Image (cartoon, rainbow, N blue to C red):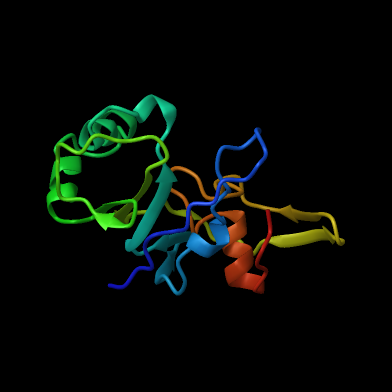
Length: 169
């Protein structure tokens, strides 16, 4: 398993955003195996890198406590285990210290095993496409952009896979 870790920290001058957005298309994995059964598309589990910056409410708290409280879908013992296994990186350094205290502007990366929910297997129909807007007809079970347990099984992911469209936002 190979991952490109350590995204660059770039702080724009805009006060509306504290950090540059991380392009969802760059993070989206390629060539993830799937199968279709009874009209439902199932994606095989895959390894992925989750990236973020330290939030203000995290500063001064232990990293493993933040994971345990903020990411409630994880087993409560998982953050300490992931840290000890070297699956968490802070400021481009592998973090194995379970007592690490998060600092302002820390970049945090976590290598996780992703299990996406199944979706209806429908080809996404393009209704209209001009230079400014793409209008599509999507299945109701499919979110538009990566969120929660979805990354590949999204409109953006499926348009990339089905039609080779990239750079949509």
